[in-house]
Length: 388
Length: 134
Ligand SMILES: [Zn+2]
Image (tube, rainbow over all chains, first blue to last red; front, side):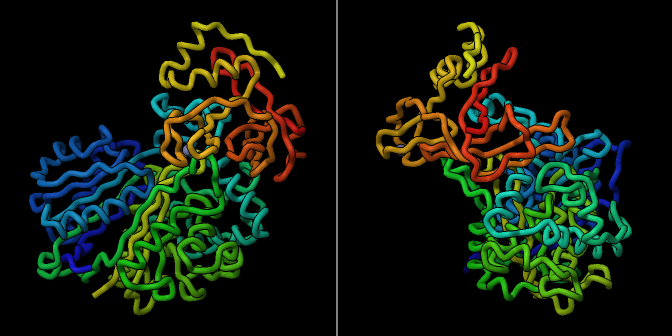
């Protein structure tokens, strides 16, 4: 596209995974400070702020006041875990349109300290949502919803629990090198299969971790990016969508990645074959399989075969994936995976991933993920990033 | 099929957030499963709305479903006491709905299985359409 591009000049993942002594606002502030320091900027340089429902007040206003930001552009787009990848698109558009020069995106939360049973507690209803009486009575846990996706995928395509287990195995092989990862033990397919069944289709080790913490990113105009000392990581293409329940005519084995990925690839002018590294949101192993298919890394229904035998392990397989250990082993702050996906993609493009997992000549990377589960609907966002 | 007893006053109170779909719950109280059917595109949808999500028409009428369907997917919550079956059921009329499969051995439920609706009385709450093997 002809509009001026935006560059990711700052990225910061909070090292904590358990923060009972910090407020959510403090965690946001520490993430913001970490990202501006990484970029070589200061809080006073920020003129655009992007955040989602995890912020105090579920609005950009509170943290903007806490940090005393002097803003020209505010965006509180809330789409669950993929909000931050949508924010990348929105920040790039705002920068291209001249609405801001330095955009800050933050995410933080502390579900671990608060003792949330994220995946297995029945979802709380919201009476303003017209479908609430058509969900709440059935006790649809997040694990139960993804369990139904897994069972249907197995039914339609012959996907196996062993294939899903390879996703977790791959994440654990990466997490062993990440000193901040919550789970650093390497696990085997047998370990995953031996873990307790949470609900049909989902074993305990198919589930991501529950962690406190957060992350932040800075996007800037090209001339500001070039004035800084960080490697140049350009936002080459973005896409997002809402994969609706389609009025009840659902397809539970397909995700919004088909739409958001196609848009991001088209804008970037690349194909899945060009991607050297992929961050793909791994709330549950089945969701990685479905997204890889829908992003076009393999034909629909072949995702189980694609991820087996180490295809996602850096240095071993054809598609190095979630080299920080992902949500399955490293970090899932605020129960939202989009920010950490962005951050590890930036590390890979900069050559700053752990040497044991760094992809050689990593010049094109992807970050993708879903957000929220409503019935079988969810938001989805994809970003393609390139190193210049 | 049970006929849950719920006073008009309670039903009005529980449906205050979405009064336009009250006919669905009044029928549910009688043990009838209604579908919001669009007469413009001649298709029912789920969950019920008064604007058709398939074509945008507001020409919606309530029609009673036959109450039969097929299990689209199912996942039994194994850590719950007792375990329960979360499911999608595709109604014979077309739409797929989130539900539970009840009054049966949860280990015996399979994708593709034929099921029929049963309304479950829930104390202080709206009666929920669930399904049991047909
Ligand atoms: Zn219609």
